[in-house]
Image (cartoon, rainbow, N blue to C red):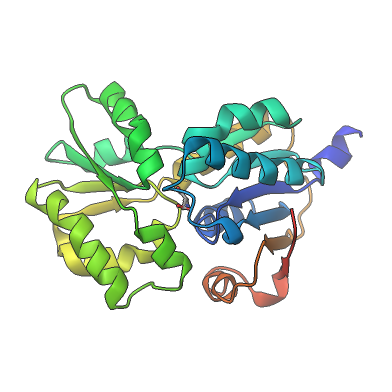
Length: 269
Ligand code: DGL
């Protein structure tokens, strides 16, 4: 394949469900001329409470499916897959692989109290990656690690602002507010979809950070350094593939894409 053909290839993006659409939204905004293929393995959602070997197998199967298309780079739009499986994925595919950023640069800058928290799945919290990265930016900073075992599953089930999700959020935010933390990083790509619900509980006391913008900066550096940016001036296409039927994907996408620009289908990996 020559360079021009490679530049026209899509960018592969994936998650365990609809969560990674919060990353795709930012990528679409930053790279309007790129084509995207997104896989949401919603049949296996949620993955964040599973053993690491299972998470690694699920992530690798999706990555290999996208690699066969082929795609020019792969963006793992999932914190859990990133912390557990990025090395395994890099060993199995032929293109550059980018994981989600931790967002710790933005969150440490946003915190006046120098007290920050990460909200994430159990697997991501158990990796302590956010804490390690935060301490590299500021060795004195206090980092509260809040596992949210029910949240991604609730969001995937369509609970965005109703009582079940508010009840879970009250439980997860209570210790964070008691610790007088003023900046929280959303360490799971599902969570930006409930940021408004979070703000209704914490009011103005907490600043929430979506790391997708930091991730998008890494995507740009990778595309530029590999001379992989699509030179086209036309709007790129978006293909959304899920492993089981979902109405939620279309509803969430309407917030940031024109329905005519998007194709949604169910695939077997
Ligand atoms: N959206 C995913 C993340 O960022 C995981 C959700 C799940 O399947 O548990 O970690």
